Image 1 (tube, rainbow, N blue to C red):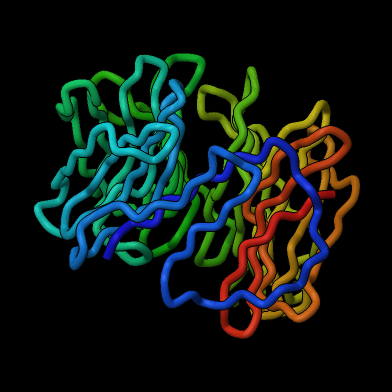
Image 2 (cartoon, rainbow, N blue to C red; image 1 turned 30 degrees about the vertical axis):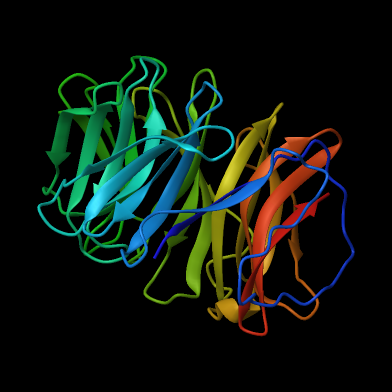
Length: 341
Protein backbone atom coordinates (compact mmCIF):
# COMPACT_ATOMS: atom_id res chain seq x y z
CA UNK A 1 0.00 0.00 0.00
CA UNK A 2 1.16 3.53 -0.74
CA UNK A 3 0.46 6.90 0.84
CA UNK A 4 -1.78 9.30 -1.06
CA UNK A 5 -0.63 12.87 -0.55
CA UNK A 6 -2.90 15.63 -1.81
CA UNK A 7 -2.29 19.35 -1.51
CA UNK A 8 -4.84 21.90 -2.64
CA UNK A 9 -4.00 25.60 -2.61
CA UNK A 10 -7.09 27.77 -2.96
CA UNK A 11 -6.43 31.34 -4.17
CA UNK A 12 -10.17 31.83 -3.67
CA UNK A 13 -13.12 29.77 -2.51
CA UNK A 14 -16.33 29.48 -4.48
CA UNK A 15 -19.34 27.90 -2.72
CA UNK A 16 -20.69 24.99 -4.75
CA UNK A 17 -24.27 23.79 -4.95
CA UNK A 18 -23.37 20.72 -7.00
CA UNK A 19 -24.71 17.42 -5.71
CA UNK A 20 -22.72 15.04 -7.90
CA UNK A 21 -22.37 11.40 -6.89
CA UNK A 22 -18.85 10.37 -5.87
CA UNK A 23 -17.68 7.17 -7.57
CA UNK A 24 -14.56 5.15 -6.79
CA UNK A 25 -12.36 5.27 -9.90
CA UNK A 26 -10.76 2.08 -11.20
CA UNK A 27 -7.59 4.03 -12.00
CA UNK A 28 -6.17 7.35 -10.86
CA UNK A 29 -7.08 10.17 -13.21
CA UNK A 30 -5.19 13.48 -13.42
CA UNK A 31 -7.64 16.37 -13.60
CA UNK A 32 -6.58 19.78 -14.90
CA UNK A 33 -7.88 22.83 -13.04
CA UNK A 34 -7.01 26.49 -12.50
CA UNK A 35 -5.02 25.90 -9.30
CA UNK A 36 -1.54 25.39 -10.73
CA UNK A 37 0.07 24.24 -7.48
CA UNK A 38 -2.38 21.44 -6.71
CA UNK A 39 -1.18 17.85 -6.78
CA UNK A 40 -2.21 14.36 -5.76
CA UNK A 41 0.61 11.86 -5.51
CA UNK A 42 1.13 8.28 -4.38
CA UNK A 43 4.28 7.89 -2.30
CA UNK A 44 5.71 4.67 -0.94
CA UNK A 45 6.49 1.06 -1.66
CA UNK A 46 3.96 -1.26 -3.27
CA UNK A 47 3.09 -4.20 -1.02
CA UNK A 48 4.15 -2.47 2.21
CA UNK A 49 1.57 -1.23 4.72
CA UNK A 50 2.17 2.55 4.78
CA UNK A 51 -0.12 5.11 6.37
CA UNK A 52 -0.09 8.87 6.98
CA UNK A 53 -1.40 10.20 10.30
CA UNK A 54 -0.07 13.78 10.47
CA UNK A 55 0.87 16.63 8.15
CA UNK A 56 2.56 19.96 8.97
CA UNK A 57 4.32 22.87 7.27
CA UNK A 58 8.04 23.10 8.02
CA UNK A 59 8.05 26.92 7.98
CA UNK A 60 10.11 27.17 4.79
CA UNK A 61 7.49 26.23 2.23
CA UNK A 62 8.07 22.50 2.55
CA UNK A 63 6.04 19.87 4.42
CA UNK A 64 6.44 16.97 6.82
CA UNK A 65 4.16 13.95 6.69
CA UNK A 66 4.29 11.44 9.51
CA UNK A 67 2.93 7.94 9.93
CA UNK A 68 4.27 4.44 9.41
CA UNK A 69 5.92 2.09 6.93
CA UNK A 70 5.64 -1.57 7.77
CA UNK A 71 6.21 -1.83 11.54
CA UNK A 72 8.24 1.38 11.87
CA UNK A 73 7.42 5.03 12.36
CA UNK A 74 7.96 7.20 9.27
CA UNK A 75 8.68 10.92 8.75
CA UNK A 76 8.99 12.30 5.21
CA UNK A 77 9.89 15.84 4.14
CA UNK A 78 8.35 17.04 0.86
CA UNK A 79 8.90 20.10 -1.30
CA UNK A 80 5.91 22.26 -2.39
CA UNK A 81 5.28 19.98 -5.40
CA UNK A 82 5.28 16.77 -3.39
CA UNK A 83 8.79 15.59 -4.23
CA UNK A 84 10.62 13.77 -1.45
CA UNK A 85 13.47 15.79 0.10
CA UNK A 86 14.31 13.37 2.90
CA UNK A 87 12.68 10.37 4.58
CA UNK A 88 13.57 8.57 7.80
CA UNK A 89 12.20 5.64 9.77
CA UNK A 90 12.31 5.09 13.53
CA UNK A 91 11.53 2.09 15.72
CA UNK A 92 10.30 3.60 18.98
CA UNK A 93 8.62 0.54 20.51
CA UNK A 94 10.68 -2.42 19.17
CA UNK A 95 7.39 -3.48 17.61
CA UNK A 96 4.64 -2.04 15.45
CA UNK A 97 4.55 1.75 15.89
CA UNK A 98 3.59 4.95 14.06
CA UNK A 99 3.95 8.72 14.49
CA UNK A 100 0.59 10.02 15.73
CA UNK A 101 1.35 13.75 16.09
CA UNK A 102 4.17 16.13 15.18
CA UNK A 103 5.18 19.78 15.40
CA UNK A 104 8.25 21.94 14.78
CA UNK A 105 9.42 23.79 17.89
CA UNK A 106 10.90 27.29 18.02
CA UNK A 107 14.46 25.91 17.62
CA UNK A 108 13.64 23.79 14.58
CA UNK A 109 13.45 20.41 16.34
CA UNK A 110 10.71 17.92 15.48
CA UNK A 111 8.72 16.98 18.57
CA UNK A 112 5.88 14.50 18.57
CA UNK A 113 4.23 11.36 19.81
CA UNK A 114 4.19 7.78 18.59
CA UNK A 115 2.20 4.73 19.63
CA UNK A 116 1.60 1.13 18.65
CA UNK A 117 -2.21 1.04 18.45
CA UNK A 118 -4.77 3.54 17.21
CA UNK A 119 -7.59 3.31 19.76
CA UNK A 120 -6.86 0.90 22.61
CA UNK A 121 -4.55 0.51 25.59
CA UNK A 122 -1.21 1.17 24.03
CA UNK A 123 2.46 2.01 24.39
CA UNK A 124 2.99 5.75 23.97
CA UNK A 125 6.25 7.51 23.15
CA UNK A 126 7.23 11.18 23.26
CA UNK A 127 10.23 12.08 21.11
CA UNK A 128 12.45 14.97 20.03
CA UNK A 129 14.44 14.72 16.79
CA UNK A 130 17.16 16.82 15.18
CA UNK A 131 15.93 16.56 11.59
CA UNK A 132 19.16 17.93 10.12
CA UNK A 133 21.07 14.89 11.36
CA UNK A 134 18.18 12.50 11.91
CA UNK A 135 19.33 11.92 15.49
CA UNK A 136 16.82 11.24 18.26
CA UNK A 137 17.65 13.69 21.06
CA UNK A 138 15.37 11.85 23.47
CA UNK A 139 12.46 9.43 23.36
CA UNK A 140 10.41 8.69 26.48
CA UNK A 141 7.95 5.93 27.26
CA UNK A 142 5.47 7.09 29.91
CA UNK A 143 3.59 4.32 31.68
CA UNK A 144 2.61 5.65 35.11
CA UNK A 145 -0.22 6.44 35.10
CA UNK A 146 -1.00 4.33 32.04
CA UNK A 147 -1.84 6.67 29.20
CA UNK A 148 -4.24 5.46 26.55
CA UNK A 149 -3.07 7.96 23.96
CA UNK A 150 -1.11 11.16 23.45
CA UNK A 151 -3.35 13.14 21.12
CA UNK A 152 -1.36 16.34 20.57
CA UNK A 153 1.92 17.99 21.56
CA UNK A 154 2.66 21.72 21.38
CA UNK A 155 5.05 24.28 22.87
CA UNK A 156 4.35 26.44 25.90
CA UNK A 157 5.26 29.97 24.72
CA UNK A 158 5.97 31.10 28.28
CA UNK A 159 8.94 28.78 28.92
CA UNK A 160 9.54 26.74 25.75
CA UNK A 161 8.59 23.41 27.33
CA UNK A 162 6.16 21.00 25.66
CA UNK A 163 2.55 20.33 26.61
CA UNK A 164 0.95 16.97 25.91
CA UNK A 165 -2.76 16.19 26.12
CA UNK A 166 -5.08 13.27 25.49
CA UNK A 167 -6.89 10.54 27.40
CA UNK A 168 -5.86 8.11 30.16
CA UNK A 169 -6.37 4.35 30.14
CA UNK A 170 -9.12 2.64 32.17
CA UNK A 171 -10.92 5.71 33.54
CA UNK A 172 -10.54 7.53 30.19
CA UNK A 173 -10.08 10.95 31.77
CA UNK A 174 -8.67 14.18 30.36
CA UNK A 175 -4.97 14.62 30.98
CA UNK A 176 -2.49 17.42 30.41
CA UNK A 177 1.18 17.54 31.36
CA UNK A 178 4.29 19.62 30.71
CA UNK A 179 7.59 18.07 29.59
CA UNK A 180 10.99 19.70 30.02
CA UNK A 181 12.22 20.55 26.52
CA UNK A 182 15.82 19.53 27.23
CA UNK A 183 15.43 16.31 29.21
CA UNK A 184 11.92 15.10 28.33
CA UNK A 185 11.05 14.77 32.04
CA UNK A 186 7.57 15.60 33.37
CA UNK A 187 7.32 18.94 35.18
CA UNK A 188 3.66 18.61 36.25
CA UNK A 189 0.51 16.79 35.24
CA UNK A 190 -3.21 17.45 35.49
CA UNK A 191 -6.06 14.93 35.21
CA UNK A 192 -9.77 15.78 35.32
CA UNK A 193 -12.95 13.71 35.43
CA UNK A 194 -16.52 14.76 34.61
CA UNK A 195 -17.97 11.68 36.31
CA UNK A 196 -18.29 9.17 33.49
CA UNK A 197 -15.84 6.99 31.60
CA UNK A 198 -14.69 8.98 28.57
CA UNK A 199 -13.34 12.55 28.83
CA UNK A 200 -10.81 14.06 26.44
CA UNK A 201 -9.27 17.28 25.23
CA UNK A 202 -9.46 17.24 21.42
CA UNK A 203 -8.28 20.60 20.01
CA UNK A 204 -6.52 23.68 21.37
CA UNK A 205 -5.92 27.37 20.67
CA UNK A 206 -3.05 29.49 22.05
CA UNK A 207 -3.39 33.15 23.01
CA UNK A 208 -0.82 35.48 24.54
CA UNK A 209 -1.64 34.39 28.08
CA UNK A 210 -3.70 31.18 28.00
CA UNK A 211 -4.56 27.91 26.25
CA UNK A 212 -8.15 27.04 25.35
CA UNK A 213 -9.14 23.39 24.78
CA UNK A 214 -12.13 21.97 22.96
CA UNK A 215 -13.21 18.54 24.07
CA UNK A 216 -15.77 16.14 25.44
CA UNK A 217 -16.98 15.34 28.94
CA UNK A 218 -18.95 12.23 29.89
CA UNK A 219 -21.26 12.87 32.82
CA UNK A 220 -22.31 9.27 33.49
CA UNK A 221 -22.04 5.75 32.07
CA UNK A 222 -23.94 6.12 28.78
CA UNK A 223 -22.81 7.45 25.42
CA UNK A 224 -25.78 9.85 25.49
CA UNK A 225 -24.18 11.48 28.55
CA UNK A 226 -21.35 13.04 26.48
CA UNK A 227 -21.32 16.86 26.23
CA UNK A 228 -19.06 19.37 24.41
CA UNK A 229 -16.57 21.21 26.61
CA UNK A 230 -14.34 24.28 26.60
CA UNK A 231 -11.50 24.59 29.12
CA UNK A 232 -9.11 27.45 29.79
CA UNK A 233 -5.64 27.01 31.35
CA UNK A 234 -2.94 29.54 32.18
CA UNK A 235 0.64 28.77 31.14
CA UNK A 236 1.46 27.40 34.60
CA UNK A 237 -1.03 24.57 34.06
CA UNK A 238 -3.75 25.97 36.31
CA UNK A 239 -7.35 25.40 35.21
CA UNK A 240 -9.04 28.82 35.00
CA UNK A 241 -12.49 27.48 34.07
CA UNK A 242 -14.25 24.64 32.25
CA UNK A 243 -17.76 24.70 30.78
CA UNK A 244 -20.27 22.48 29.00
CA UNK A 245 -22.86 23.59 26.47
CA UNK A 246 -25.88 22.81 24.25
CA UNK A 247 -27.73 20.22 26.35
CA UNK A 248 -28.54 19.82 30.05
CA UNK A 249 -27.40 16.69 31.92
CA UNK A 250 -30.94 15.30 31.85
CA UNK A 251 -31.34 15.53 28.06
CA UNK A 252 -29.97 12.46 26.18
CA UNK A 253 -27.39 13.63 23.62
CA UNK A 254 -23.89 12.72 22.41
CA UNK A 255 -21.98 15.88 21.54
CA UNK A 256 -18.31 16.67 20.86
CA UNK A 257 -16.51 20.02 20.58
CA UNK A 258 -13.73 19.17 18.11
CA UNK A 259 -12.09 22.52 17.31
CA UNK A 260 -12.13 26.15 18.42
CA UNK A 261 -10.62 29.54 17.62
CA UNK A 262 -10.47 32.80 19.54
CA UNK A 263 -11.85 35.73 17.55
CA UNK A 264 -11.65 39.10 19.30
CA UNK A 265 -13.56 38.56 22.56
CA UNK A 266 -15.41 35.42 21.48
CA UNK A 267 -14.74 31.68 21.14
CA UNK A 268 -15.94 30.00 17.93
CA UNK A 269 -16.45 26.22 18.12
CA UNK A 270 -17.28 23.39 15.73
CA UNK A 271 -18.00 19.73 16.32
CA UNK A 272 -20.44 16.91 15.85
CA UNK A 273 -23.01 14.77 17.58
CA UNK A 274 -26.58 13.65 18.08
CA UNK A 275 -28.83 16.15 19.82
CA UNK A 276 -31.39 13.48 20.79
CA UNK A 277 -29.47 10.33 21.73
CA UNK A 278 -26.25 8.37 21.15
CA UNK A 279 -26.64 7.33 17.49
CA UNK A 280 -23.95 9.13 15.47
CA UNK A 281 -25.52 8.15 12.14
CA UNK A 282 -27.89 11.07 12.85
CA UNK A 283 -24.98 13.29 13.90
CA UNK A 284 -25.23 16.97 12.97
CA UNK A 285 -22.43 19.48 12.51
CA UNK A 286 -22.32 21.71 15.58
CA UNK A 287 -21.33 25.35 15.31
CA UNK A 288 -21.56 27.72 18.24
CA UNK A 289 -20.07 30.86 19.73
CA UNK A 290 -19.40 31.88 23.33
CA UNK A 291 -17.95 34.99 24.90
CA UNK A 292 -14.32 34.89 26.04
CA UNK A 293 -15.44 33.50 29.42
CA UNK A 294 -17.21 30.55 27.80
CA UNK A 295 -20.79 31.78 28.19
CA UNK A 296 -22.97 30.73 25.24
CA UNK A 297 -24.01 33.48 22.78
CA UNK A 298 -25.63 31.35 20.05
CA UNK A 299 -25.54 27.81 18.67
CA UNK A 300 -26.56 26.18 15.40
CA UNK A 301 -26.53 22.66 13.97
CA UNK A 302 -26.43 21.59 10.32
CA UNK A 303 -27.46 18.50 8.39
CA UNK A 304 -26.79 17.48 4.78
CA UNK A 305 -29.74 16.41 2.64
CA UNK A 306 -29.26 12.75 1.80
CA UNK A 307 -26.29 12.45 4.15
CA UNK A 308 -25.60 11.03 7.60
CA UNK A 309 -22.83 11.19 10.22
CA UNK A 310 -22.34 14.92 9.61
CA UNK A 311 -19.34 16.26 11.55
CA UNK A 312 -17.24 19.42 11.77
CA UNK A 313 -13.51 19.01 12.40
CA UNK A 314 -11.76 22.34 11.79
CA UNK A 315 -12.88 25.98 11.82
CA UNK A 316 -10.95 28.83 10.16
CA UNK A 317 -11.81 32.52 10.02
CA UNK A 318 -12.29 34.38 6.72
CA UNK A 319 -13.55 37.94 6.12
CA UNK A 320 -17.17 38.17 7.28
CA UNK A 321 -17.45 34.51 8.19
CA UNK A 322 -15.82 31.12 8.65
CA UNK A 323 -14.80 27.99 6.79
CA UNK A 324 -15.45 24.65 8.46
CA UNK A 325 -13.76 21.48 7.30
CA UNK A 326 -16.40 18.80 7.70
CA UNK A 327 -17.46 15.33 6.63
CA UNK A 328 -20.63 13.39 5.94
CA UNK A 329 -21.59 9.93 4.67
CA UNK A 330 -23.74 9.15 1.68
CA UNK A 331 -24.53 5.66 0.34
CA UNK A 332 -21.79 4.19 2.57
CA UNK A 333 -19.14 6.50 1.10
CA UNK A 334 -17.19 9.17 2.99
CA UNK A 335 -17.31 12.62 1.44
CA UNK A 336 -15.18 15.60 2.33
CA UNK A 337 -17.05 18.86 2.63
CA UNK A 338 -16.11 22.49 3.01
CA UNK A 339 -18.79 24.67 4.56
CA UNK A 340 -18.58 28.44 4.29
CA UNK A 341 -20.80 30.75 6.26
